[in-house]
Length: 242
Length: 242
DNA sequence: TAACGTATGTGGTCTGACCACAGTGGTCTG
DNA sequence: CAGACCACTGTGGTCAGACCACATACGTTA
Image (cartoon, rainbow over all chains, first blue to last red):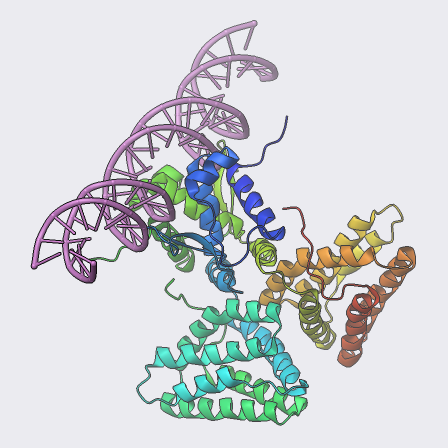
């Protein structure tokens, strides 16, 4: 008994090995579904099941038609799939908001401290650009919160730790979810919005000051203050459209 | 133009909504593939693609045959799918070992501090049991390292933060991978093994002492010492069999 | 009553067929 | 000769139908 694995696993393993051995690199195009099917001796439907997994996980991007942009292409954006995973995990088990917040506190204060201590001062250019965009008065609440989440993500990116970056990216949609739910419970959303903007500037400033402890504190109060201010007792992260 | 989404997305959305609305809870069985296909008006292959995604993400477990154990069942073990995701992410981009280590440092020191500060002293029963098992002389290196990773994971579990737990679970296979690779570079592996055991005991003791700062330090030195001792300069996490 | 064996329904897989789409390359027209 | 035009080709996306292996449920039989 060869104990043969499920057919789609064969495909997944095959592609994983190609990735590990460097035969496939980000930007490359995978063989066509029909070609893979023939090469591995499995049905096209099994190939598709494997490709679907890779797509949801954010490792490939597929497009029909012809030309260089068509087919399945390795993208491997860090955290691209972590987001989908977190979303579904939240849907199935419902991470408590408190756990998400405290995880943010742990990760983001560490990131801020690392940035403050960094030898060549990180530029934080991308982060500041986002803050500038957030000054616009014409932003909807949802847009503002999306930019807010992106700002926090950009700090993780600046720190350069790919694992933390991927994790934060995965938390992003959950963060947006609870932030949106929390915004509805606030007495004066416009005031909060202005305060958040100021706090964001403070975070950048404290990081640039090079004082790790100060950076930690600024980030900590920014995140925990917002959470404390909202009325989300034991609530769970609400749904976000996929 | 209704801009209809891909068929498998419809299935994924449908199941996600059922999860969010509580119609589907862990332990429940999903409708059969043929039933879902008919209900949603999509082909069975599309249903299967969606189910495959859920399976790889660790949200469902599938079994053929009949009876209560057959079919697709919601499991939603935290981090069950994060592992697969990390694996493939590693395969595609290759997280630097240094990033994994520093992420561990951030998360695990926070966990240790939280445990030490916890009001009702956490029992750490599961963790201590693992340590007892690790005393056995008959353990292979791989087994020892697997238990090591599990011990660290058990601490995260004890802390009760589901998000951190899921993240650590996702990192587990990567951690085992670099630990295994590092063990090969050590001068005296048996000595290291004994030292790791002692350090694990120290971690438990420092947590139980209630001194958060001490717990932090113990964990920090445990993780960073092992990494520093090994010779893994810019190496990447090696492959682990799926 | 207990052992057996079949009916039933599940997921797992493959095949073949169609569709929409996007470049490609030829043809036709000015 | 240059440009616009359009059928051709190959891609992913989807569906329908057909098997298979498997595990249970239940009726039959000893």
